[in-house]
Image: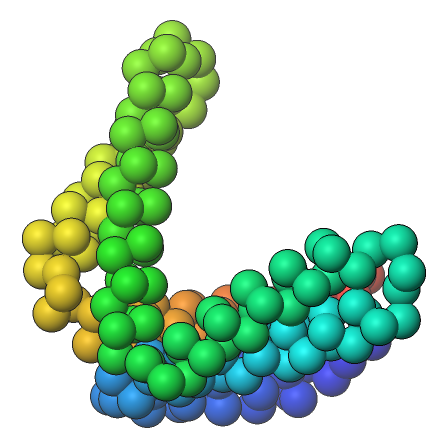
Length: 172
């Protein structure tokens, strides 16, 4: 069982880092693109090694290696264009997810929780619309802001979990 004080300390650290990163969303977004680029290059190299070690799967391993290496190179060599493309994908995903949630909310209208489904759909549609309406300018703050806000909420959740009295279960 972990110490609630240690969990609380880690939560406060996560909160402080989350708020600090919220001050530099472009830096955090660019860093995310670079890390993803390095991960793709490493995956490509691993698949390339796999080409020479597995006899029956060489073609698929080679195709995978090329795709990962090309994607990694694009992310590393063109981080701004990559952030713009990622933001577009996020906006389209939010918008299409909102449409699908709206369809589900209307099809399950008489069921319990349909108001929450409708609310969720509207939020997704509004967020997707905001991202796409301000795209490509939103590319320079969206990815970093989303990561920082997620870190802040994660820190709050961990802090509240650490401060909750134990009831015989492992909380951390």
